[in-house]
Length: 164
Image 1: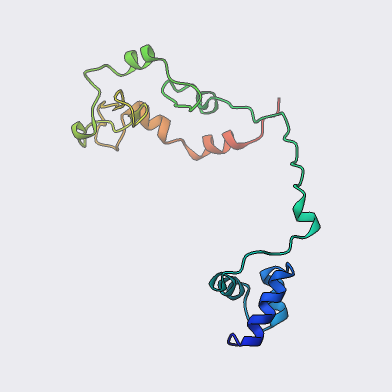
Image 2: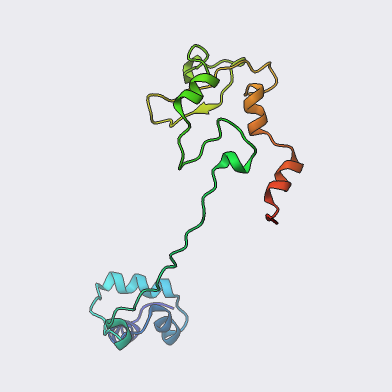
């Protein structure tokens, strides 16, 4: 149906009375809620009658004080030395011992034979890739391949609820 003068006047009245776009669409018939919203916008209608409940702000629900407990990833997936958690930075000397400086690579230094495991924050100047030997079997050295690729049985075991 098209917007006749009578329908536009009824739209204006219903809008001023505070009806929702869905309610107006139902009253007019043969028109969608979005069509009502578009017409209201094109007509520049604003000042709506406020319903008594909408003038008073609603009280907010209180949040519970209990938060989810964060468990470091290293404890979830076995004791991997380079497991990265957003709350805990790996110890610099630990990385220093595991990945020697001469082994580390930048993105431009990576090859098919070097480990492409990222270490650190990519936005940081200290960011680097492991650079260890891959052995040609994939993108990671043997240590990082064990971290990245877990057997399906290990993944299922990690998802089971803890029964202490």
